[in-house]
Image (cartoon, rainbow, N blue to C red; front, side):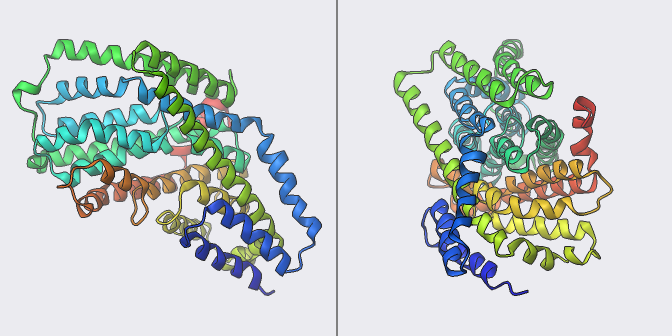
Length: 448
């Protein structure tokens, strides 16, 4: 069987992406042009249209996307992160790396309450980076910990990526949230372990705060407990209602959006101009995701019609049946890691998942097909978290570089993220080697 047309589509996609055109237009345009060139019946193109309307535009689950985006942006405006950072840094200030530990802990809390990578990285960079540099922190280490912890929001629920993955792979979002919780917290824990090693063996890279900048322990603990209460209640309300089955993801996202709005009002941090800016950013982010979904739908329909899925299965050796499933998993994860250097998670999700997921589901890992797909979805999310940190197009690197002072060079930023990328790959390997890290909590809570 000849694979001329699928190969042509892959080549055209690479050229289109590097041409600078919007990815959604590139995807849809290649699909339509190749369909005409390959004599695909015009009537078949209506399949893409029907999937767009029935699978995307009328999908109530996707309403959770703008609601979670709104929730994250509102929490950014609430001032909670600023107060938490001040309290934690004051408590841990006497230790080497006190500010770094505070950033890591707040990164985990913000990841579980916002899920907006750009907002988290910029917010933590603006709040913590000047203080860390002033306190003679190693610039690569300071930028690395901010960039890495800021990307945890793509994995730790409630995550927009997990909502999109649930819709694309037809997996319960509650299962995905439960499955991602332990790997996400494990990754945050690995960051903290790394910082502990630096504090023990190379404390000069992150010295303690001067005595005058430390807060009295009692008031600092009270302030920390007070400021942690509201986000924890919000997180437990959103995640708990989804995982327990009390509310759908859309209903829980609506509760989260309302709660974040109330917190921003209560903190007296929200102006009318900021509210309008949040609505504008929410609309822009949602439109981008939906636009890419439409383009990817058209591309994948034509790609599979012309034998693209069979081509990939043959390349991986799946069609022969004599292949090690873990080798196939390794090749796919390597492919996704490389794609993450050049593409955003949205494009990768909508291009790769419809083609790769059926192949993964057909492999024998000693698990049920449902568990294999859930496990693969979390591995996919773990892998794509590195896409925010890997050059040349890691978005978190651009965010950090944009807010860093001139003395912090791009080379310093790149050098700082290397240990954290290694840690993320270690977390991915652990999740591959031990599937219960992903599957235990959904099976205990949901009986999945």
